[in-house]
Length: 264
View 1 (cartoon, rainbow, N blue to C red):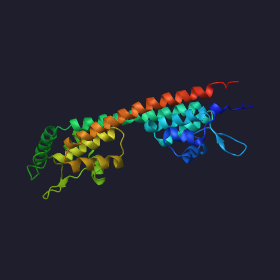
View 2 (spheres, one colour; view 1 turned 90 degrees about the vertical axis):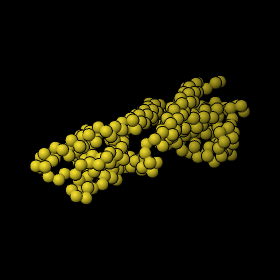
View 3 (cartoon, rainbow, N blue to C red; view 1 turned 120 degrees about the vertical axis):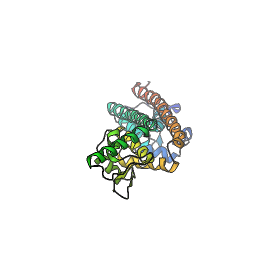
View 4 (cartoon, helix red, strand yellow; view 1 turned 180 degrees about the vertical axis):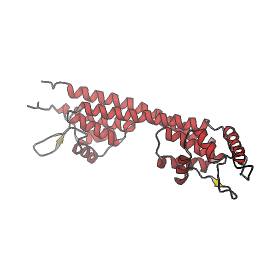
């Protein structure tokens, strides 16, 4: 049988709302959504909240910056229905996503550093020379300064030429065509884009996710202007990681309060 609430245990919706800069309707909505445990009602139908509801709301508000609204809400619903293992799984998945984001950032930074067009240019010239020998000294286009053909570029990246053609169809690389031979000629900017796409693909990005970043690189005129964006990306990931720690502390406090036996 629920114990009779003392006056100091009673909290009005407005008390919870003011503590977190929310509206009273938002507090009621969170209860209806299962983010807060169900509140007791007075004989006149008014909601009566307790310190347990305050702890639940603090936990939810603290979880949102690190895990996002949807994940935080799912965690709280799981806890409130007694499914703590489900809540922990959701938290673990969110941490895993942060780790994946860090790996992607490292992949992007690696792509920025991994720009050695000289190696690809030399390979392109060797490819042209071999082609002349193979075709009896016929006319075979030499790549221009900073340029290469699809074969040596594919070899340098460790991908198939068909993969480069797929990236071209997706608009991620845009080689020009030699007017005499029709060969694809990848100039320095194309090589840069291909290397960036390759690194992001290795980081698990989908082609449609890569397209906006490649567009940013092109709009900025290269990789160097994006160094500030990388620094900001680092800062956002660090803030998210720290927010997860804050959320974990408040969630633990809420779990402990739920486990505390009611007083006399």
